[in-house]
Length: 444
Image (cartoon, rainbow, N blue to C red; front, side, top):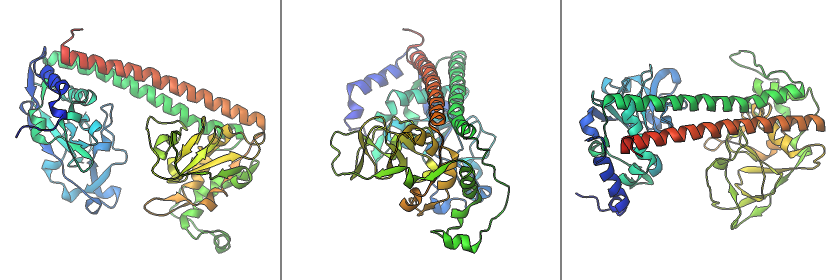
């Protein structure tokens, strides 16, 4: 049955299909380029392995990165005995994300890991015939995703979009000679490698801020002895507000001891917790947890909207995310707006004693995270309780040292941003060249 949805029938999409089918290079259906196309299998919570040593990685859409890389970070695992040989990924297969939000359907990577893996049912495995290089097919699919082809081609269901195996097999792509494919892939791989190196350098710059803070405060590294368990005195437990074993984790205890070596104070003595409730934010800029990048204090490109009550904040306030504090979401407000109530809005009592900029930097260091990640309560949505936040111990410094730390932080953040911006331009240009060569065969 022919597609009846409006988007599929738009002149723009039909023109794009014609351009793909009638371009400089002969067009072939993906199904004709594949020895096989296999969809993975679903694995809910009850089907997953209980320990990392008990299963094999189960690749899901989040493991396929936008830049064409494959990561196993955060991968769920399934019991080895539940995976049949036909389900095991083979090196050189193209992994195609068949189900996701509309903008991300079509993410593709080449599987080239020396690790036994399987895929979820949201991934289609494609084994290429000799006429097409796996890298070329993956990048062609990524190009189609980037220009919105799969967003329109997909069908929507349950707030998701999908491209089934039949539709994918019928999708046509231009297929140049193998030497041209190899050249295009080599050029794009070089740009990707340059991007990966620059982004790693940018991340190292941001990560080094933690070390700079400790050095300027005169604190040693937060080292922990290797141990299988730990114990506390009963009197210590009785004096605390909780009997949670993790609350007395050696990492948290060590962080507190380090901070106690220098001038310090609990947050309750340093800042006012602003809780100005805004029921209707109107046109005010809204900052939710997704708006703040983990660990860096930078805003992301995510645009969020308020779903209920908000907290008002002003320039110079420090927003500290209390939900899943290990995510380390701390932002120094640079404008007036409203935030999710999952943030604590903090305003220093005495700006001469404690600069907001310094507070934001310190709250992102491991000295604080080493405390908060062992203080969470709740299972589904673990967060740090209000009474624990106010008692967080913060290292202090004289005004000159605070200024030095802030200036060094800003310099490293600026250099990190410069590296990112430059290499993203290189990567964008490389992707555009690949797209132009794919669709026009080198013509301008």
